Image 1 (cartoon, rainbow, N blue to C red):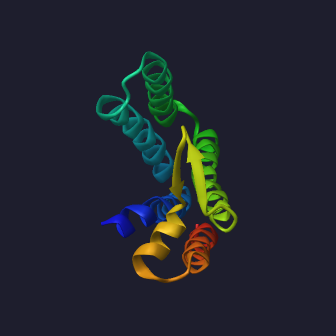
Image 2: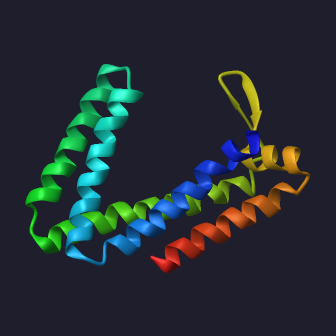
Length: 145
């Protein structure tokens, strides 16, 4: 289970970003995608967010995306959705890049290993192999989008 959790964030960000980039190619895809992101933000507020600032910002952003997805002209909704999708893909690439150089971190006095090091500890495959695989997936999904 530790291996699944350690690699899930890198894989899912790359895959969702790539699929989102593919989805942007149609007008209806951009509308559905933008509204979907807004709805997911509101759903996240219900499930996870417990502070006033987070609720205020995420509810406002979620509602704004839903309204934008519904009412923006086709050109602008396509541009907005392309920005969201491209940002997701670029996040997948930059997040993985860090794993090549950071094997552990200290947050709040607690030292923990990177996700790539966790994968190395669980599977005995070196951390740089995992980082390379995740980077290859992120680049491939970005190129496919």
